[in-house]
Image (cartoon, rainbow over all chains, first blue to last red; front, side, top):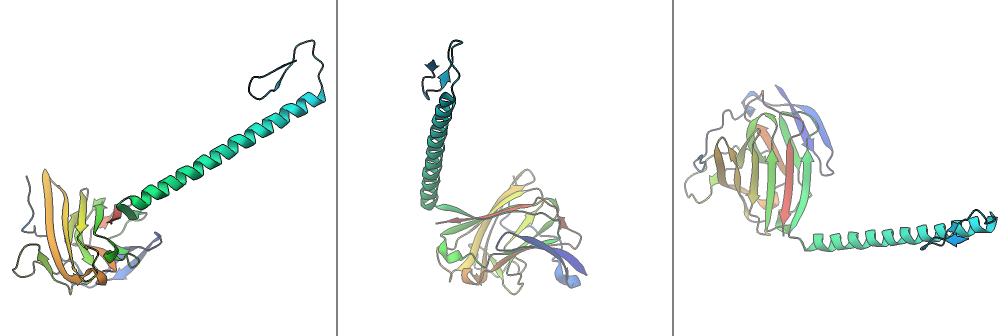
Length: 39
Length: 205
């Protein structure tokens, strides 16, 4: 599948291109890290 | 004929003759006064610019990037290859993401690196990235480069959470000298950062 990737270059210019990525590219739901705290 | 107090401009009475010489002298006086005022403003501007440069050079904080995204995207790649992390004691990465998005901060886009929880001697917690960001929250990730490119990338992220605060401390198998790009990688294919997402990088001497 393709995703839109925005690249911010050294000079500050921004470009967007469609990039092909594998289906397993996405890590999925983020698990809370052990150091996370909520109050 | 009378004259104004400061620039000696003509002030005619009804009985005064209208003479060309008076107008020419007035215009010459105006020209001289405006020229002096312009020179003074120019000198003051130059002095203040020089003062700002001196203060900026003395400040320990230098803004290296200030980004507001101009287009929507699923992923954002930051080219940082011109930033030498070894020039700085500490770097701050400030992130405020708009849209429906959650994802990892991944140095150089690689998943080959491993990430360890700071202070832990147990195995790596992930190979997905240094830290996690969510939309509509503000985060500061602090990198402890210590003016060394050979140190492993280590950072602490502090940010907002729903009703509280979140922090993560992570160390990578990558070194700061290997650090060239930061990728903000979404965790799901349908996530998108909206236009107006803000990212800033500060170097601290």
